[in-house]
Image (cartoon, rainbow, N blue to C red; front, side, top):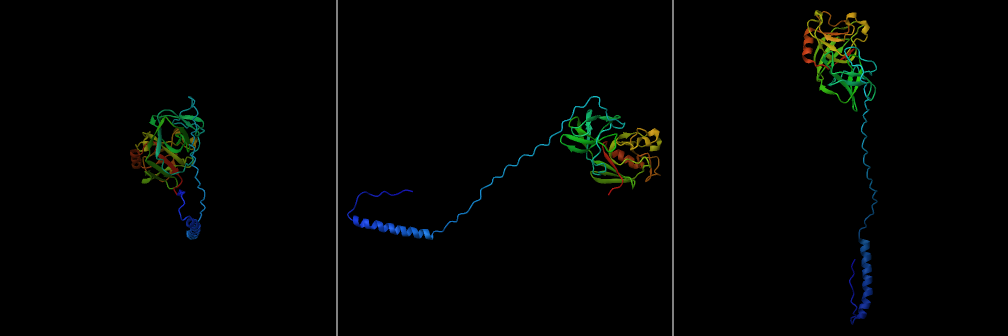
Length: 295
């Protein structure tokens, strides 16, 4: 604040000025008290201390289990039963469509778990047919696929050496009602009656897939190509000697007299017209699941 300077000169009426100064001081004091008593009082508000939230710590990235080197002498998965030691399919009766397939571009090591043991190689082809296996699960840096030539079993593959393809179709087979339903993009397209495996050679339950197609070896198949599936008989020794080593097939028959019955050696038998339509529509790798009955 600034204050005015008083002059040092004393005028003739100094006495009057001397008496006036105390009077002015008294008046100023009274006015100041009056202003103080009438001015509004500003309340004091306690302001809580400002808390600055701590920055969220970044979530750690999921680590990728490393793939152990695969010995060069590992067996290659072929049309024969696959090597043992692979884990079970985590959801064998899941009827949800498997919409993505995996195609090996070279021999790819197959492991029993992410970062686990390499047990075999998946080759680009099996019996000359381009191999496509459905993808059932993904984890950091690893992909699980249905294993060919084994029932209800998966293999884990590290990244690299394979490509993916879209799979639009799915086949669902119900053992109790002897029905086969063809789904595309999650919706039913057609349904047909089928014959299934007889007692002791029941059509295996669980998820598998279309491995490839082959010409009919005998006239009893109605002259229509056969779909070989990735599944094999649950009890390979129970089938006739001439069928030892064969895969479960999806095929037609020379007549339709036994549709709706359990008469096959584990295969799925349907009409020639239905088989021709599926042959024209389905791609290798198409998933097929056999259940007792849909809910």
